[in-house]
Length: 133
Image (cartoon, rainbow, N blue to C red; front, side, top):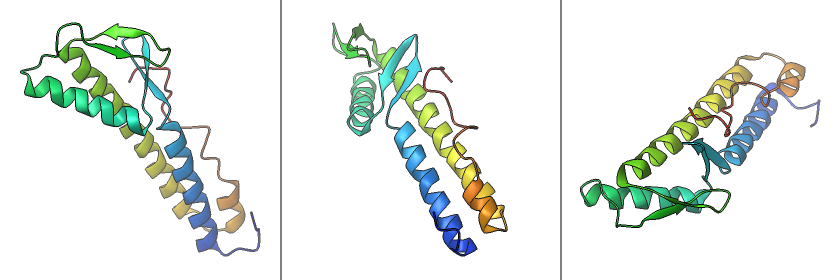
């Protein structure tokens, strides 16, 4: 990045990189019940849809309902388990956003361009997709 940029431009640039990083990790996977579950945009919509299906059917899914995990294994799920997958996805995505908000607040609090450009936003605070929250 250009070391000659002003403070506001540097903060805007780094905050944009933080948003990009959040988007990249929140579109991978999360872990629940020993399985990794995809959370790309299509998967998020599908999880929400399956949760709605369970809710409108009194907490039930059709007999034999399965959900495919990130390793392409069909996992039999009940309505309650599908709702828990949705809850865990929400917790993971919320933790990603919270980390980004803290990092952006830290960047906005810095008062010189070199500190802003050197800010390490990748090594702390982000949730691990391998650990159930």
